[in-house]
Image 1 (cartoon, helix red, strand yellow):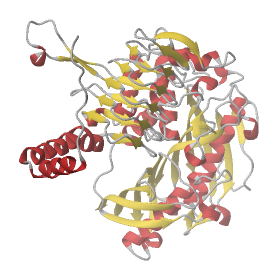
Image 2 (spheres, one colour):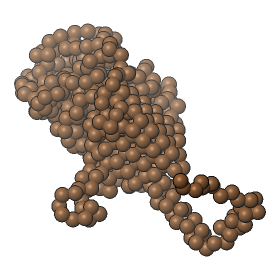
Image 3 (tube, one colour):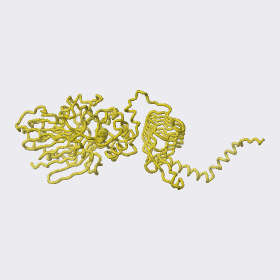
Image 4 (tube, helix red, strand yellow):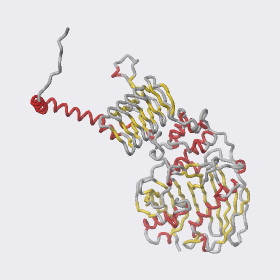
Length: 572
């Protein structure tokens, strides 16, 4: 029989002596520096590199590697001794909102190879993104391996080793991570459920081409956190629908919560190639009308996609001794809208998508070209505006308006899409919608995006040049805000002109008249927002003064509009 062994007991005095000795031991002090260095290099410094949402709670013993490849959503809780090790190259760890990570979890986006005959430490690594959706709970000690996607609402049991994707709402457990059940109700829309599908890489590539500045790290982040606004969504949907050659149902589009969800839409499953839209036949020239002074009268629709209006230029149409620019913008917009409602065979208040949701016209670009300038239109001159309308797909429309009078001519090109209010709040809630077309053949579609739209996309993706002049503009709601609470498209010429006057000095608008104005609309702002005007270029050449400028929201710096304006200096 072996002797009994008892734990040695120490007195208070012995414990005190041990404490004093430990503080005087230089080896302990050196180890303290090692601990501080370890904590900094595995927690503080790496966590600082990560992209983090609000309401984040992280245990001080959690560790991180390659923080530049880590994205943490809002209200994420990370337990003690949990490790998030992204890859040193491209392997990312992207975690959504309201995710709970218990203690002792290991999430890695990289693994060493082991088959080239070299020691493990000398071998290359294989990397693959790990994506964890919203409202996910991962239990104690679970291991999440590279390339895994855990979709929204899933629960991972304690100690599970997850090697493959986990569907939305699934509850998995065990070393092989077997599915035990589901949190998702059986009556969930199957179209929404199929967002669990593997992302279509061709669509992902298309998204990167359309938005080259979109950080891949935020592809699965919520739209607002990824910096995606209503115009971005409109552009993306149009590009994807065009490439697919078919529309995306509105109930599917409304279900997306991140850019990555677009690449998993059920209607885009299978092949993804350019559509086979029929080329648009050329419209006949608008019939000329006699140039005689007449009273202004309502729109005369000659046929689908064509319109003609006749006016006498009187005080309601005038400003600064010439044709009013704001009036011309409004009138061209009204004609554009009237031709659309004629094509859709319903009043503007009744335009809706397939789900019955109300749609609103959203202008994205207006290009005005006048010869010689707006002062060439004189009081009591006859004015004729002949217009034509074309479309690209179901929701992008292009109008051309030729305005003629004895002393001047103008060409106005209008470009619009449709949008509706979603569930994301305020003016960032606008999402693209496609109206129901009773007779699509009545207004055939372009088979490729017209130059006006292609130029818009290019300029939208181009960073503004250096700032030469800057001033604030306070929105005047009674003039600048339209009936649905957004900045009115026809208010932008005045807003820009008032800022040009501040730049050039008093009398600039009186002594110069608009010859061209090209306005691009990128986003919108609340009525209480302060706008920032920035001048990026100015050129004075032979009596023509041109400005390139932009407007941004002061609250977040978001660029909402850009203008290229040319004014003709008046000599008399």
